[in-house]
Length: 451
Ligand code: HEM
Image 1 (cartoon, rainbow, N blue to C red):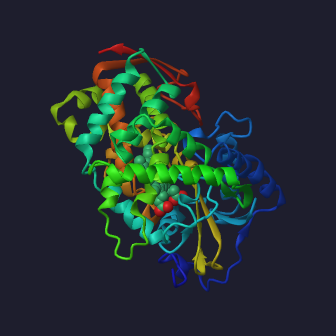
Image 2: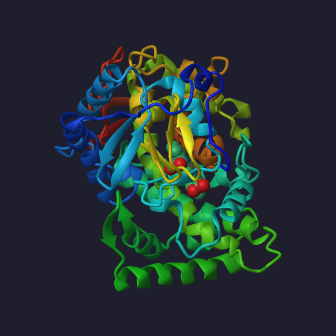
């Protein structure tokens, strides 16, 4: 961003742009730290992986956090509020009318210490190629924005095979889902040769979480660097022989005119991103276990002849709705690269702007039936441009693997539902809501009966 950003119309109304920012007072700051920032920090330390967030931690109470943010919004008339965060001031976006401006900040950078993305903390190693180049590789290899990934045929076959192993025992739990998805992920990213390589997944898991969170150094020990180097070397071995449809196979074909890009270097992030799948799949199936009619409709879609196209629109809406209720990334943080103006107040370059996604997605003041599972809302006109709902973010920072992620989660759910009814889900949920603020994937248990 090279110029001051304003929201059309609003700046004229606000006048000179020299207004004073709304600032959280001492009591609000303490409440924000206790109910929002600290629990998020704990979620970050829980491994940097969204699906390992610890909603069961005594600190993590999203409804306390929502109450804090709602009170702040009411007190400051909806204006973005400057709050003292754990690593400096944060401009917190509380009103839906400011969401568009947040996502339009194409030049703003993701915070280097952002708590987590689906692809791991910080989105990439500091020594990697510049973000624009990385983004170009991600967009091309993941086929960002294309509903059905070009490799959908082999990917759906892999998912069908791995689901057969997963459903054999008649119950579905997180540990089994993780194993099946990790195997499928290695096959899709690196090829069949990597199917059994749990050692590689272990190295990646243990080398994650290094760097900083909210400005606090978490350290990057020599041991961690060694693990990371070992993983990179192993990935490079697979990349040399991977089938053309795999993600590294596609990356190998990515143009690299200067020889400095290392297109296959992103593979570790793609493998990590697959970690979002097991918890999202289990939560979606648990919600479908309670909503029987929706489950039957999804199963019919899964059994229909055109399910082989991977589109599965109905199931994808269920997955999106499960992500609205239980997002992978609860807060988005961007650091501005130029002066910006919010409601007539200027903020210098380098301001950290935070959008509490979970808060907005579940905000009963602005979201109809905020705490109820309503997948149909995703098929209404304009739903995908509705900035209040952002499981994959919006604008330039949007997840490049959004469609691939939807395809993979929906295909796993379809493969389960094709042959089974999902029953007796635990924990028990009320179909008409309100749904609990969090759903610990480790506590989910689903019973499968033949269909
Ligand atoms: C349910 C599945 C997924 C969800 C909910 C999800 C969500 C997100 C979100 C919200 C972001 C933006 C984070 C931020 O701006 O701070 C993001 C970034 C990213 N996602 Fe995903 N994602 C999913 C699946 C995937 C998959 C399957 C891949 C690749 C195989 C992927 C690759 C990435 C990458 C590389 C980034 C970082 C982009 C950047 O730094 O520019 N995601 N994801």
